[in-house]
Amino acid sequence: MNANKWQTLAAVAGLMVSVTAGAQETTASTGGGSFGNVGQLVISTDASGSLGYSTQGSGAGFIFLEPGADYFIKQNLSVGSGLQLRAIFSEGDDPVAFGLNVRAGYNIPLTDKVSVWPKGIISLQLGDPLLPFANASLPADVTVILEGYAPFLFHVTDHFFVGGGPRLAFGLGDDVEVAFSVATTLGGYF
Image 1 (cartoon, rainbow, N blue to C red):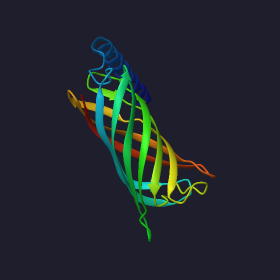
Image 2 (image 1 turned 90 degrees about the horizontal axis):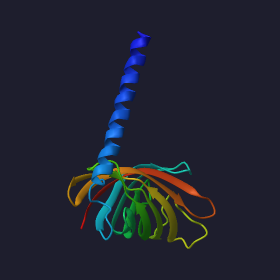
Image 3 (image 1 turned 90 degrees about the vertical axis):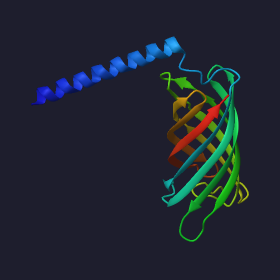
Image 4 (image 1 turned 60 degrees about the horizontal axis):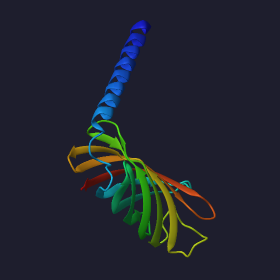
């Protein structure tokens, strides 16, 4: 019985290696589709809504919307900016914040229809202090956040994509605070 489990595991591993090698060969021959070409302008919005958890031990529901624009300055290398709206729903207080960010990303084509587009983001938010990012070193209504976001994109048609992936945020201040979420992305490019 144990031999069958190992044989099945070996067959699955072999299949995964074959699919990965085929995807790399397809990407090399097709260039991973047209997303990420020099001079492209991408208009997108990132969104998430869930129960969040902070390193301070507080749980709260939150919604996050971020419309933005990115421009590919080199093949697969993008720079951009976005507007942010964040709202937290907890007992008693429901803080809301607006923000601006700058970001840089690098598109990694996996197949002709799939890529991953990790981005580093620096945000400045104005509004009510947002848990978990209450920052004692800045005025009560200003928060600086460093984020990493790595959405996997599915290119539905030429010039249109949907995707999602993990997002990790660090609130800066006297104590570094951390939040993790999964966000979605919807956008197009020309």
